[in-house]
Image (cartoon, helix red, strand yellow):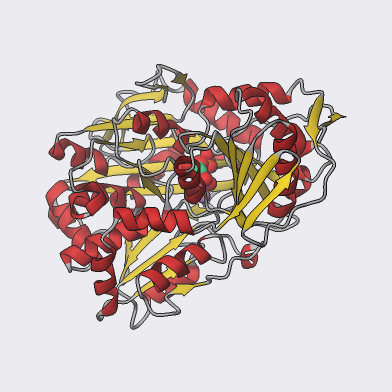
Length: 543
Ligand code: VG1
Ligand code: CO
């Protein structure tokens, strides 16, 4: 069947951010908008003729329509085969798993992660390469450059295909296989973790709750936790995936995962609670009346990795994004393995994992993962904790306290100011940069500023340089304040302020983080004049 070529003109602003192109649904629905981006991807990723493309998304509004457009264009551009999750569903880590397992050339993942979904909310798309990981900056910049001069796109004039049934259909010369979105992923999880031990744990007095937040992990969690591991029905709450995520904000943190948090801090709370986000790559871990910060979680997984069959031989190294606390650095030091500090966003971990330099990676933003795929992975992190709990047979709180006693505690918190005027946010960042030379040597309370800079990263594998990755104010005592502008929002700017301080003294480990970091939080406001620039006296979310 002959491809048809349609003329088009460029749209402004199609530069992928921290994790792909994210815009309002209404923006994506403009004729030619999605098509331009997709054709730009196909134009720059090399020779894929006859090879396989993986397509799937988090099930949000516009997911299915977008998939039909993408598939017809894939066929017209020469892909030989496409693998699509049934109903157009693939969680982000499952998409990464499918790309790797089936030797695909790459994949298109449709998601705006935890951002709300619906006709007036957000949509997103990103390209992942054959390793299963998000395209590196070189590729995303080439895609963006192409969107600036695109003049036509190729498609086929054919009917939509059925995504609801497993099986194979043809679009032109391309074969489309509609696959079970859970099967490959569940099999991979079974190959890493001790399912028998976890099943035994869950068959006793131990109780867990998993909040899928009406998003993509519902079907994954019901199969893995309830069917395969035998947790009682009802263990997975909000397990029906909806295209508007039930009107919620599927961001697994103490603010948005309210139902789970109430349960875990209530009477008769379960022993273990967890939640994942819209596209299944984030995780939140809770014990009874106890919250585990994502940075601590990464450190604890690294310290206990040998208890898990998939990591029984030890881990090669670890990596964390720059704003993530240094808790994992201490574990790496004790284990005698390397620890890498990368810019924010999972794409920076890909080269390190491909080169065998790191096994576990994580971000403070509720993201943890390993080299089993090339995305962060929510249900994987939950299984990792369950495996540790099944072996150690102590509570989540005991595991964390013991960890702090051994390694010290990195008090940590992030303040987000959402929907700030973009120009005002840029001015504040410029003001901070203008103070780099004057701040060192100054003291704020008992802390003295040691250095300030704008974080720049040279990839140790391909030597590519990424600069302007966040402003760091580093103090003599090792504490830090970081300022960054988010690269995933769709309205105005989001200012993120990350605060960290290390406490060695076990007697001081019982404090609330806000209390322990009180002086640094105040200093952050003084140094940045945030309130003056943004007009905000309180953050939108504290994690
Ligand atoms: C945020 C997080 C970052 C994460 C990214 C994508 O980016 O801070 O750590 O990798 O979201 O996660 P930003 O630029 O808004 O700070 V997800 O679950 O949205 O794919
Ligand atoms: Co996500």
